[in-house]
Image 1 (tube, rainbow, N blue to C red):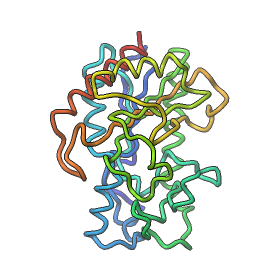
Image 2: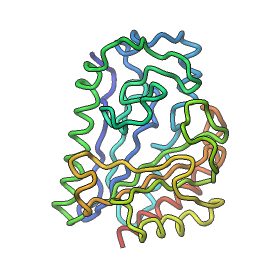
Image 3: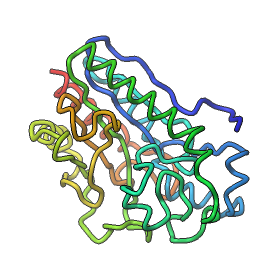
Amino acid sequence: MAHAVPSFELRPGAAGSPVILHVPHSARTVPAAVRAGIVLDDTALERELDDITDAHTAELAEAAAALAGRTPWMFVNRLSRLVVDPERFPDEREEMLAVGMGAVYTGTTRRGTLRAGDGDPGPLIERYFRPYARAMTEAVRDRLAATGRAVVIDVHSYPTEPLPYELHGGGSRPPVCLGTDACHTPAALADLARAAFAGCGGTELDTPFAGTYVPLEFYGTDPRVAALMVEIRRDGYMTEPGGPAGPGLHRFATALAALVDGVDH
């Protein structure tokens, strides 16, 4: 499966920084060979990309990295999550399988059909998911070797109004949702995030999205790997759905930089 852009990019930061800003859902690119397996017409696919893409989050993370006192590392997915979603479990542990959104999506945000349900996800998993997971594992391992710890900060966004695919869409939708994990999110990290985003309209924990991303090699076993998911409600920084970024992007980037500085202090 050839593609026009690299599947992912690791941007080096300062040698002594433990922070990795992880941006998994910011891209819209779907390689032609993958597009052929998607049943939506072009108009419907563009609408789906508007809904599912965390638009401008790579730009936001880049701005935060530039503002931080010590440059964090960045790991950015350059392909759409409609190719594979690198943050899903690749097996039956993934609760989003209930709506056809495991590592390889078969369903859409509005509970329609994205791919034929009898298709084999194996080739996409091998071509895209596993290399991404290996590279992210190496990035975390490298930070552990260099600094004795790694802090993965996931940069996401979510729509103001819930979409039908959301399993927990009935909860509160604050300006900033902080996703946590019992093993990998120390209370001090959550506190730093609350303080950093205090001027952005309010934060809540694990609503409407919960959890964090940690490479499976470390997940649940290595407390040296800390993780936090930052979900920014889209009306705070862009025109929904899929429109341009606005002045709010700088405000959230400044807050994210403050979080990076607090972690790296």
